[in-house]
Length: 394
Image 1: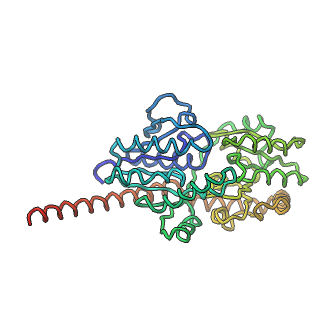
Image 2: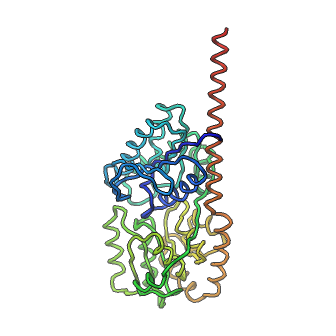
Image 3: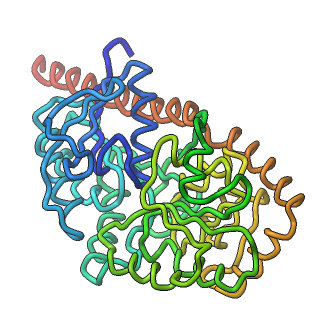
């Protein structure tokens, strides 16, 4: 393509990432697309980015901060609406929605900017998350339908989600997974010492502290163990303060359970790299970037047996029956007692992450989708011009 493709990302909270899988996905993908020469704009929420400027550059990406109604139910949809209206005035080639909730509004550019191509990425079946009430779940289901119907192309981040879209909405979507890239870790001893940790002597879980991530199940299972390995829970509230309080109450009295709050950058990488085991007890996922990161750092994983987790690890890790405290406790105990077996699984997981979940490959595949729909649009517009010329001449 001779001209730069102009792309707007809408739906994410913002970048640089504080927490959240969609945010990490957008940051990693947009950085590589910008580096490849595409003109990338990411719409962000000021309460997330902590920036007061409306517009600025970040690693070659244009960031536009626009307001939202920052409540549990209105934050995403109001920001998506404001961002979409703004995007209609910017002459983008592509508007790319991330998440099924934001995709609920993907009909707007289809109607009011017909030349703009629209893409949606289906990251997760959000209505399965327990924090949502009845009306929110209905809206999210409509968002799923919209993500599969309104955009010119729909991308799913897992094969399980691709199959779901085919069965539920009779829509053949494009599978392009989440990715992972490790970064060198500096001064790991400092962050470990801060929490009283030593290399290879703790179990780590990294996620937003929301109920469907299953951290309550992990704490209950860990409390049944007799092990010297600590449990480190990395993550913060996502407008779920009551649940976070419940987790702290459940962990009360066990000095080996450590809550670090949100972590990112070098601190998070250090905690990943030096863990003995990564535990993911989630009851619902799309394709967990935290799980992929643990694999890439050579940390073996123990995950709930939901389809999306099993797809990621295949036979490179361990699994337990979803929501089962007893089975999770049993598998944790086995993992702690068999370091040689876990080391083997770690090596297998690291090799799989490098082979299947490379962000550079993912960026290339995404670029191909962009170029395809733009070429398709150019062909349609050329055909219309020819037809119009023919009609005039006759």
